[in-house]
Amino acid sequence: MHARMRLSLRPAAWLLTAIVALAVGFSTGAPGEAAHAQGAARVRMGVLGVLPEAGIFIAIEQGYYREQGIELETTLFDSGARMVPALGTGQLEAGDGSHSAGLFNAVARGIPLKLVADAASGPSGYSVVALMFRRDLADSGQIRGPGDLRGRRVALPARGIPTEVLLSHWLRSAGLRVDDVDLVEMSFPDQLPAFGSRNLDATVIPEPFETRLADQGLATVYQHSDQVYPGFQVAEVMYGAAFAQEQPDVARRFMTAYLKGVRVYNDAYVKGDAAARQVTVAALIQHTPVKDAALYDRMALAALNPDGRINVASLAEDQEYWLASGAQQARIDLNALVDYSFADAAVQALGPYR
Image 1 (cartoon, rainbow, N blue to C red):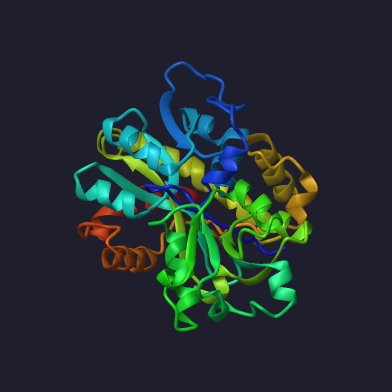
Image 2 (image 1 turned 45 degrees about the horizontal axis):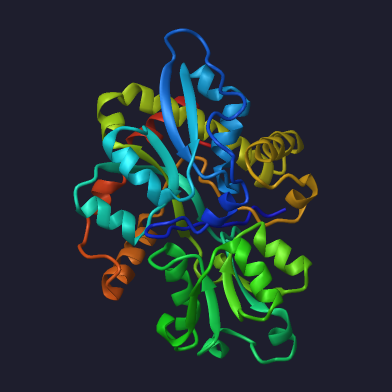
């Protein structure tokens, strides 16, 4: 099975924020994080409870953080944007979420944080989201491709997110811009009934919603993200600057545990290792709202870079789009924002992934 999947933010929210809406009441302290040996370093991390966080959840369930002398405390957030102030003030050491115009604006205002590892991306063969058309419109030939979306109602969970940039790629291929469609801001769970009542015509959407829309006969996939924009970068592991600067050894050990979990995920969905797949699915069932094990045989799950590398060129394209659209007020130095030192140290400890 190909590993395909997604993400985003509103005022800087994750594209995948909506999955968390399915998990209301899911709070802090995931299983497997019980306090361990006295003297363990405490790391507080913001999570969204979504599928691309597989590396984190595998590392929790397999005890990789404990191996590194870390007591991980997770707090569930409803968007990556809400983690940014807590990272800036030191209330969180780490977070998992998407870059966005809002996050870049926060960095420009001096909120200190670093993007330290990939947390969801879409190289060729691995999709983060799909462009889907309403089934009756696709079947009747009224919508055959992006060129037929002029004036149509197209859903995104928010503006100023990577998925808006991706939508612009699809529209540009047909000579259109985002302003040429009727863009509707709507959470992913709300989109299913909206398609059922014919109040939406198209969407850019991740799993598990892609599969659910298809199963219910409400929408059909036109293309996956890697078919229009291979290498699309969606989400990253973030460190607060204080954590990175004042606890560099703990930050390196945290990254070693995280990438060890990511490599199990890659063993499962890239190498096809059955035992690794069983570990991965069990961790995702434990920590996300997607509880049906059979769905994991059918969903297109995201790519997670086993060495933590981020596609900075994709971040740069997003920045140019947001500056041009006015969503981002000031240019930031992306090379200063991305810090590979922790991932590089983890790869040195683990060895390159083969």
